[in-house]
Length: 156
View (cartoon, rainbow, N blue to C red):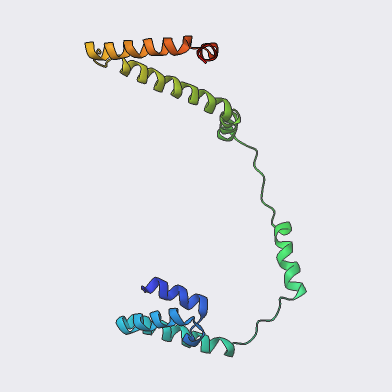
């Protein structure tokens, strides 16, 4: 168990180790035996937990305070400035962002396709054996295309 894990467990289960799950408590005790800074961290959390109940309760805000806070925006309104030239330029450029994005996607696709097709032309030519095997493949495909189910019925 590292310090971050120990700190997260302190936040989750509190400073009282007896409230922790048994497996996590054993791991925390082993980690505290190995690292003294974890003992100091636990002591600080226990001190904080002991001090919190002694603090005076916080009273709810009065109705007068709430009204004064809510009146602040009305008493000090923000001035509204008419949009200037940079704002108008930005709005006009971003209004048609879909057209720009579709155009850029189309241009990018065309560039990639052109690169792939252009790169494919730079491949070395096929050798004689590769040509023969591709001719055999074409012959086999043509024979398969001429094959019909009627031929099977006649064979039976």
